[in-house]
Amino acid sequence: MKNFITYRDATIDDAETIFAFIQELAEYEKLSHEVVASVDDLKRTMFGEKSYAFAVLAELEGEAVGVAICFYNYSTFQCKPGIYLEDLYVQEAHRNKGIGKGFFKYLAERAVREDCGRIQWWVLDWNEPSIEFYKKLGAVAMDEWTVFRVEGEQIKTLVETL
Image (cartoon, rainbow, N blue to C red; front, side, top):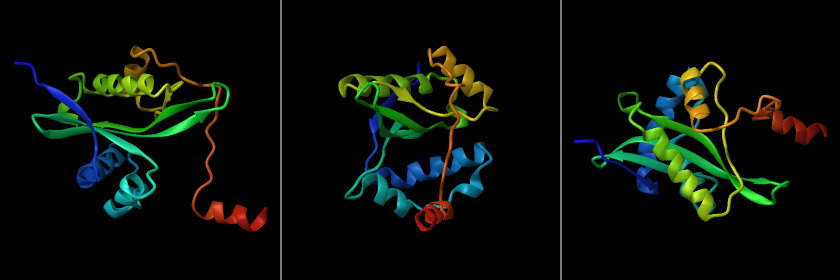
């Protein structure tokens, strides 16, 4: 009998599970040292008075086995919102079972329902299994774009120097 995976929007009661997945993903990406947040931070920013993101859980027989964490962005050229996929994580024991495809179907249905112009995300350049997976979905690499970032103390420096 085939395992039945369900997808659902996460609630504040799922915060500890989501945070555990964030930590597992950071370990996989060799970025554990960059996780400086807490479960309380997640609760406040994802489920608080002002929500900045949303999460979708994949469940197998009622047990969470993966998460997609997203937020909305905006395309000025399309004048439409988009869904930015910040993190997609499936526990190693449950990979290659179609769960990732299920996440994309769930997000695509949401994008259609909400008239979003695109779904986009980043992937680490060394993560060949994910890159191949995304290409099979029909995703196109945006190689002509360079990502820039200002964070932490650099933001404060901008405030003080500009």
